[in-house]
Image 1 (cartoon, rainbow, N blue to C red):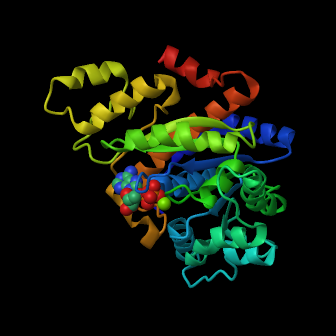
Image 2 (tube, rainbow, N blue to C red):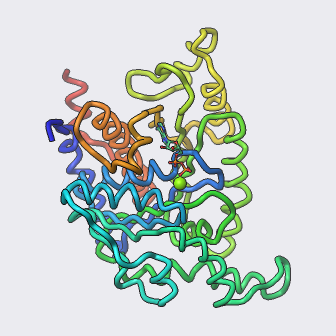
Length: 343
Ligand SMILES: Nc1ncnc2c1ncn2[C@@H]1O[C@H](COP(=O)(O)OP(=O)(O)O)[C@@H](O)[C@H]1O
Ligand SMILES: [Mg+2]
C-alpha cells in the first residue's frame, strides 16, 4: 500500500464522541441507504461509507438486503484480496432467516468491518414473509397488523448480532419491497440516494412522500439524515474546490456551457427539499468505483484515494449530522477552526 491516507487521523475527536453516544444508547447507530429507484449509487455508497467508517476506527456492520448481492461481492472480494486466497462464506442472510437463527451469518471482513451477506436466495424474502405471517389485501382490517409483523421481523432477528457495533449500514434493493420496508423500519437514519438525472428527483420525492410515511405509521423514531446527490453524468468537474455546489457556484455556472441537466436537477432538488436537507458532499463520477464489485476495495493509486477522500467527507458530514440530531448540539472541531483562523 503505497498510498498514504493521513487525512484519516484528523477526526479522532468526532469518532470518540460517536463512540460515547453509542455507549449511551446501548445500540449502534443504524443507517439505511435507500430510494426505490435503482442505479442511484446506493450500493456503491453503502460499501464506501462502511469502509471509511471502519478506517476511521468505528466498528461497522453491513447488511446486504439486495438479492443482487453487489455489496456482498464488493466486501468478500476485499477480504479475499487481503488474505490473498479464497475465502467463502457459509451462510447467507436468507438461510439464517429461514432457520430463524442469524448466529452463523455474520462474516468478518476485517476487525472493524462485518457483513451479513446476500445472494439471489434473498429474492425469496417476500415469499418467506407471506408464508410465515399470511397475506391480507391492502385496506382490509388485518392488513396493518400483518404488515407490522412482516417489516419488524428481520430487524428483530438481527438485533442480537449487532450489539457490539458502532454503526450498522443496510443496503436496499430498488422497488417497494419488504427488504426496503424492513431496512427502513430497522433504522435510525435514512440516507436518500439521489442521482441528478431528470426522472430521479421525482423518484426521491415520491420515496420521501409516499414510502417513508408507510413505515412511519408503525414507528416514529427514525429520521431522514440527508439527501445524497451523485452527479454521475456531469462532464468535467462542475464542483467547487471543496467538492460542493453551493448556490453561489450554481449562479456562476448557469450561463456557461458547463450548465448541464445534472446541475439543473441539483438546483431543483435544493428548491424542493431545502438546502440543509441535501448533504453538501456530492458524489462525483469516479470511474474506479465501477470496478469495486469485481475487484474489491483497493488502496493503490490516486483514483482509489479519491474515492476515500469523497466518502471521508461524507462520513464526517453524516457523523456531524447524527451528533447534532441526537444532542441538539452542533459538532465543531475547534482545533481545526482555530487553524483556519490563524493560517
Ligand atoms: N460515483 C460513481 N461514479 C461512477 N460510477 C458510479 C458511481 N457510483 C455508482 N456508480 C456505478 O453506477 C452503477 C449503479 O450504482 P449502484 O451503486 O449499483 O446503484 P444502486 O445500488 O442504487 O442500484 C454501478 O455500475 C456503479 O458502479
Ligand atoms: Mg444496489
